[in-house]
Length: 157
Image 1: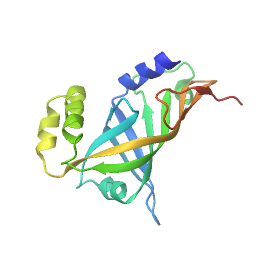
Image 2: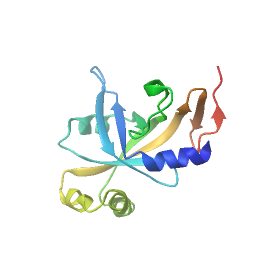
Image 3: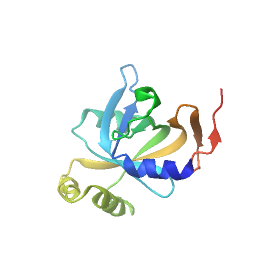
């Protein structure tokens, strides 16, 4: 299961992000992402986007990773997916890791990142895992706990 999880995270090109908004409907976005060795996830997004304000004012979000290429035996009910509850933090452009993270985006998504990074309205947000659930298929759901790099505990009915 753990080797499949590693492959799954390499195959998924984008993440859906749900952000709570006090007194309003949740905000959503769907963006490219990168992941570091500490299992933090990062997005690069514009301050002109509607979800930016929600990210700035929230301290948590939910991430959903789904492999769009996969065609599960159980149809759409059995899609392999990862749902993660996270904390959220915007990184300053002057931070030590900012340029290193941009390089991570360049490696994964190519030269378009050079154009995006040159625009003054793009920022990087970090999502730190609090807990999650990895569903490999029917009867194969696993917990991902804070501080873990791989799902471990099999969830049983």
